[in-house]
Length: 349
Image (cartoon, rainbow, N blue to C red; front, side, top):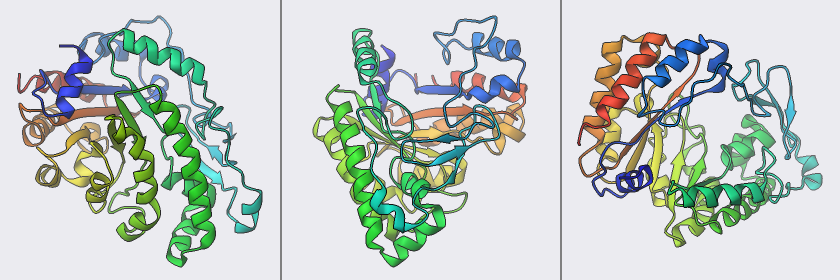
């Protein structure tokens, strides 16, 4: 069974051969770990890194908003800064911190940018064609932070929350402007007929969401529904990512059109996820990066992955898992996690 077919079967509860697993290494890791040691681990885990080819020297590439001491102004006018190469920065200057500047605010051109980075649609189209010819899963996507976080970046978090409470008319105008920009991006992607369309956006904090469920329904959910509608009409899978505690928003996300929900395990609670989602909505589980994998023992890491596979998965499918490696995790824990992900991927085989 091809990787693409296995993923589609997992999403559709059609008995995949194995639990799809992704191990992502953030580019900042190459500045913190012995590069040979990290490559040794990748080489030893071909299931997670099937196309890995060892390199004598790792070429480090950082996004425009992930470069230390190099402030980046995105096409909306937001100024990003970071103190660590490879770690996405945060916005330090908000172009509409004063609503008086709204009249001069114009959206960028979706033919040239996704709102954060430059975009080359001819290159994307050629890449999609190659993926289809190779039988690979094709995923379209909006940039991370496309709606709620975009509002926050442009306006500032505190201002935005007060705007919602006050129902400022300017907020509705700005939200519509962002929605129309994003909708044009979605339309561009849908014309390429992807298997899946991704809508990544962080909505949660360590405890609870960053905005109330009521304000989510009033200001954000309608935009989500409009943006996801073209994908659903084309039978394209809708994938939603959010970090943080989003338990009070999950029902609205699924009701709004989400087929696959990528959420964090321990922040939301394994038992809660099992009770509310397992067997009904495909879970793309974001494996803990704060506690067990960073500070636990290899045995605890193995137990965590086993528990998650057993409680959230089934032979029918409905579970995928992803881990994002960042600096600070001991090498022995990285190895234990890779071992566990490879082992329990075949738990239902």
